[in-house]
Amino acid sequence: MSVSDSTSSYKAVIYADPPSTKTEVVDLDIPEPDVGQVLVRLHYSGVCHTDYSFCTNGFVGAPPTMKGQIGGHEGIGEVVKLGPGVVLPAVGTRVGIKYAADACLNCEPCLLGGETSCTQVKISGFYTPGTFQQYCLTSAKYATVIPDGLPSDAAAPLMCAGITVYSALTRGGVKPGDWVLVTGAGGGLGHLGVQYARALGARVLAVDHGSKEDLCRSLGADEFVDFSQFPANEPPGESQMAARIRELTAGGVKIALMCSSNSGTYEQAVYWLRFRGTIVCVGVPDNAAVMAGSPMMFLEKELRMIGVKTANRQEAVETLALAAKGAIKTHFEVRPMGELTQIFEEMEKGMLRGRVVLDLR
Ligand SMILES: [Zn+2]
Ligand SMILES: [Zn+2]
Image 1: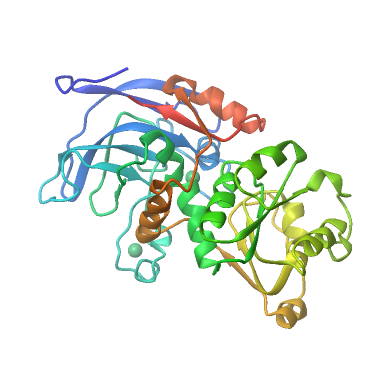
Image 2: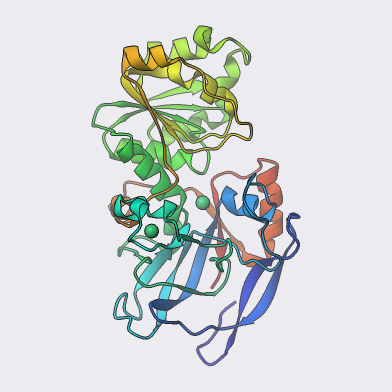
């Protein structure tokens, strides 16, 4: 599927009937970039679990998704037209579109580098047309330039999953030689978490189902713990799995990168940590009450727990720079736009391995 410059319409996938997973490929007119915007001819877009949650109204407290919404926030393409007043990125530049499609850059979260929590943030694929389309308008100041040497299809999943785990690790204070534990290590977020932790000099303990052990070790995990080999409902403080983790890491890990949304892992995470260890919350469990541990435990070991939504612009640049050096291998499969419903259904059943990237060419 390709669109020549002479045509004025293009293909987009819309959420046809939220909260169902029904999607539809439609023809739309190519829009004109406004002040501060660029028009991007998208080539690939990753499909994130958050897209599935938007399509199915899965986020409690969020407004319902509109019928006809174009989802997606892991888009890579080429700038083809500049809006009035825009100089950079120039026509022909390869850029990426992230979860935050635009931010004001002046509010408190923006000034502190937390642009994705901007009071006026525009979320790509939720009340702002996203990246499941061949053409997308985006903010010139917020698009991320993709470095040479990084293929567009492999770069797509980095625009959400990659930048999120990178910023989670760096904000968690990772140092060379630290033990980093990654939950859901064989999944879409986790497989990048393992590799970024390695690239930042850490030792990695991967936690996942035994069927993911070979994958995790091939990504560079130093140790692997198969959660399915331990009893599920032990009191967190007496967890045999936590004891095994402390044993493998001579006293516990410095960072627990929580990529899995499994609440059981959150319950015992505090027992995995060594002195001044940090839990970094990234994956979101469905139920609310999940943390164990007492203020006294936090005080005695001087522990921290932080949450990371996703990266800011500078962190996105750093994430891509590491990948462009060849340190990161994204596991993904490329599929046609028309299969989005099927992809969501496979996601729902936990059938996907690695990331799915839509071919928008
Ligand atoms: Zn995402
Ligand atoms: Zn702001």
